[in-house]
Image (cartoon, rainbow, N blue to C red):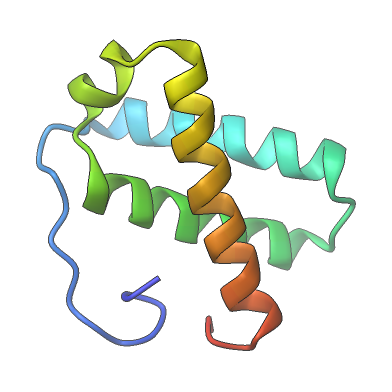
Length: 91
């Protein structure tokens, strides 16, 4: 969210391009299915989610979490991003 708000964000450095794309597409498919937003809102939400995830946890650390822990992080970050979008804090 800080990138969208104009701040500097330090990402964990172990995400490869194909891993980022895969996570982004998983996010996009999920929000497209469940939220029925316009495409731009879905893209912004998934961009925010990936930026937030990459800032908080490394890829290997994320993949080593069990399914419930991955879900908790994913849900929390997506909810935070959606809230920021609803409050017009993301551009």
